[in-house]
Length: 230
Image (cartoon, rainbow, N blue to C red; front, side, top):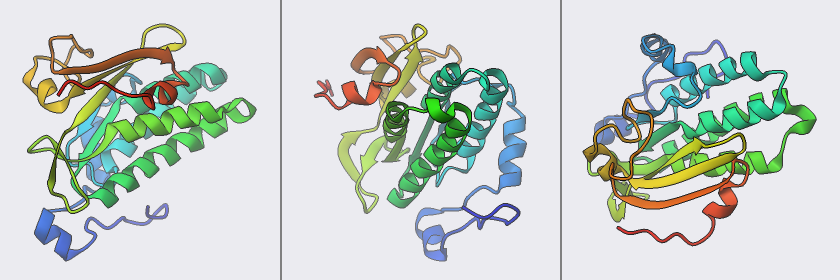
């Protein structure tokens, strides 16, 4: 990331521009576009998908807005900030065909979240909450091809595995529900994960897995075997 006050380059190399058409959106344009949906950018459960996320210019800006809102609302309530900041992380989705971009985007989002989380929660900060956040980010930021809807290998070639996204929803004060769907199924459905309804009906996409657990333990259940019907 560029230092404060410096303009981040919009390209990494001419070769990448030539081969992948990779050009990053400048910060000024990012914020101008987000200002058009400013109210949605502060809702912790309002979902955003960036199908060519790069290293996270849009997603990190959205997360920054969500976290700033949560600090104002729950800055004196560490438990509430923890819970809703994890929900905010779960609302952001990204796909990029370049593996280095995906890794950079994941790290960027986590670092932004952890800095604010540590500042608000201090001695109440939890290693489990950090692990849960990292797990959610690993599920939400995918190395894949947004055109074919398939995951890709390190060379950017399609693999046999479809892109799968998880819906993360708080269903009571402490429990979070994870529901997995193929992206192809979600895009074929009406509404779906990124639709106006804000939720997913079982018929909206190919259902793979669902479980409910404490919001700080999603990574523990997530590491168990998954029966996926592809």
